[in-house]
Amino acid sequence: HLDYDEVVFFDDINRVAEVCKKLNAGFIGVPANMEHNYQKQEMDETGVQFTCASFSDITLDMIFELDKMMLLSQHWSS
Image (cartoon, rainbow, N blue to C red; front, side, top):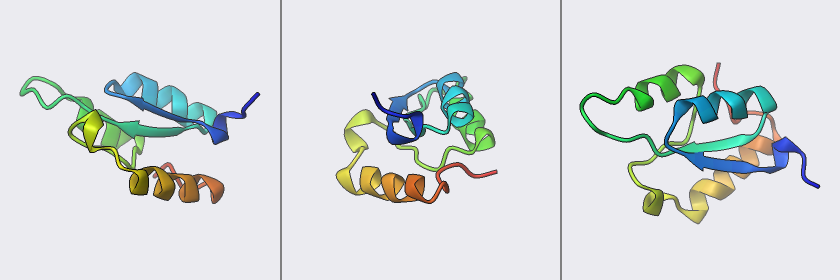
């Protein structure tokens, strides 16, 4: 029974970020870094503010910072 602005999703695909942005949900991107992959660029264009190279790079500090930004509705850049 959570609202979308109370949830954080983690994914490597920008399409998930786009849906999260429309729903005002939190999102941390873990885009693949293969040469032919454009997920990082697409996430930047979508307005994802939190990305990292690996799921294991996600820290509690990152989650807490995103949570603070979500409280202020500042978790998506234009």
